[in-house]
Figure 1 (cartoon, rainbow over the protein chains, first blue to last red):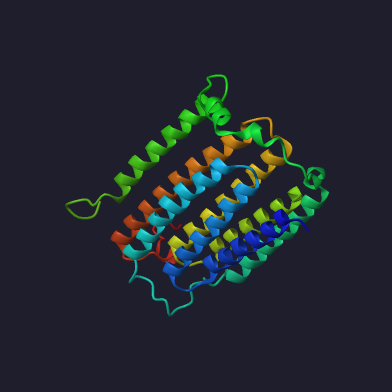
Figure 2 (cartoon, chains in turn red, orange):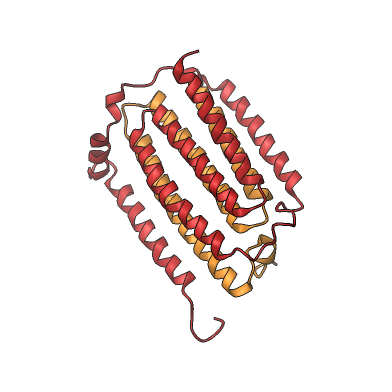
Length: 172
Length: 102
């Protein structure tokens, strides 16, 4: 077994374990901290996939911004939900069956998918940041989807500010 | 070398764990965390397929970048909704947010 395989198994074990902790621990703050560990594991998987740029983006956006937003929300709504009562709803067994069933179905799909036997990655120099940046700014490439994504982000942020804004003068 | 199927299995497991979190948790913020896990699983899949099967094209990377933007937008809107609902109803439990229930 090569070093890359050992690293992969180690990292994916940590990622999956902390993902399980995210959905199972009682305290929301601990769940948020486990989420950070899980996202960091995904970033390492991106590095193993030769996508170093996305590993960096993962650390910046997910760990730096989204986790902090989630921790803020957890702290703002702290006293609302008692940590003594069960954190899972009544239908959690059905949820477990659905998730486990989906996992089994996906495993069978991967077994029959011929491409999943591929073991060699492409040339590492093909996916560098310069090529990606040129493709994103190229009108014949991905300029329009890229601009649409920015419009989506701006619209979402303006919408969020409007939704979360405190309104003077009672219920609206 | 690592076979592609390992990445696919890890991503599928991460997706299913996130799905369980979305289906089973009471707290809406925990549901949002499950969604983040699912989006990350999708990104692992996109980058794995790009890296192993379509390395010469930029489609996989651009798709992953757009998933990142969508994830950021989704979290911002979701947390804004949760804060707004908390302010009005004093609760973040999914069961209590039933105004639109038929």
